[in-house]
Length: 477
Image (cartoon, rainbow, N blue to C red; front, side, top):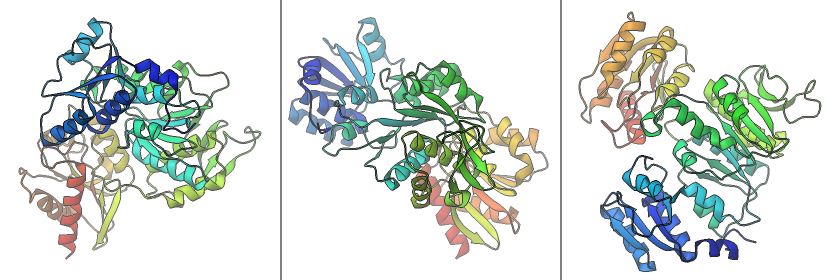
């Protein structure tokens, strides 16, 4: 059966049900369409009432879907199921009312899983605090190199519902899942899955680190072949131990060092597999060289090993791992080399929007002029600065919460020169780049790894990275 077809049992499950879809956007619109097509009486509620929301509402209303803009707080009368966009926080009044009424709350991932046909493609699932998108894209490149029909979907910006219900058929899906999505998805059972790492993030949404980790750990539930974990992050292995998996499912680690049996790792610049080989006590399979991974920063090599582990769990040959990694090109603003000026390298890692990501980025270089700052999102910077102090030639601080980083530098790296730029205008990045050039010496790397969100000065991290690259090019000219 093609993935676009609907089984009668699935149709009957929703026929006549009053379903409230919370939120429009990437997930809400396809959810409303899919439910309406299956006979549900659908009401969409949305907090916003802007031009984009009104256009989406008009399209849905033309189908016969009821849309309520500017009011996402009230549960419509008669609702017997809520399907929510992943970002809506669990403590919203709508959900409080639903729980009080005994109404189930699903996310778009839960809905996609339940609407899969009997011949649907299995999922290889990726979550973690950092590196999800890169790992999913690497995985899709490896699966494609093996001749498999696949797509990178989920939190990467491609709706899982569209992938599951579209006309195109797949052999396997590379699925990125956020902690938000996993929170609202009790049923999915991936073929294999990985939690790349765990660090404090989105705690305002989840309420605690324990709740955040528990939601991440849901990705391991029901795994059939492999639960992949990070040897350097024992919390990920703890989640594997706690998971209820199918009989015969294995724990498979990845490490930047030589791998033990049932692990993937690195030996003399070679990525090797000691998990999916015969006699893994004695044998190892070469997969790729470090030079096949771009960029070859330590955390990106870890991403490649995680992707390779999931692909190998699906039976992909070693050669496809190498070919897929060679063919892969990372998205912009992820440790992107912008230019070399006067023997100084300029690197854009604007995507490093939290301390965990920034620390991984800083660990990739020996002598750094660091451009940092923005919106801290409640983060503290002592651990980051203490771990990176020896690598810092100088620091240029920008953004609303730069004082938090400046204070951590004073405590843990008092000898490092710091330039504190008290400006948020459009020329601030050029000023930061000029100050960084003044601090840098031949052989240094000027690294934009802000450890903060961008919205105090820029629309998003992409715009921040673009401003950095443009300023570097202007400097070079």
